[in-house]
Length: 172
Image: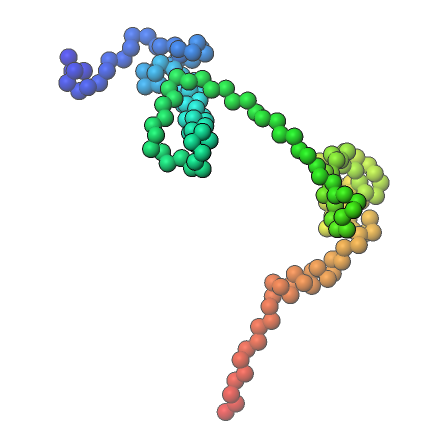
């Protein structure tokens, strides 16, 4: 009666379960799906559109898509599998005279104190000299640190406080 005049819909008599049978309740606004299933469906549609546009650009040989072709991807299930990339490490030949070597650094073992070789894990202290130390060797006087703190402090103060000289005044 009043619903016809205002355009409002009467509430359903009982809640509607999601059509994907996930156990949550759906709504007519999300095509009788719960919010998560609806969002996943929209993501799949976007991925299908991107895949179709990239496939179309590869087939047509164009480097960019101009968007003049309509792309329809409703109800398409696209499964995206991650592609494994194999890294090829190129080692310089002994013939080349360049001193640079490109090496893949192997995964290091557990973090250890440089002085006592104790395992420190995540609790290690990185010194300004670039080494890693345990709690007892973290101070510079405990591990014979080669870093010059005095010069570094002087440079920091000089940079933070530039010399300010007033202009000379004319004497009367």
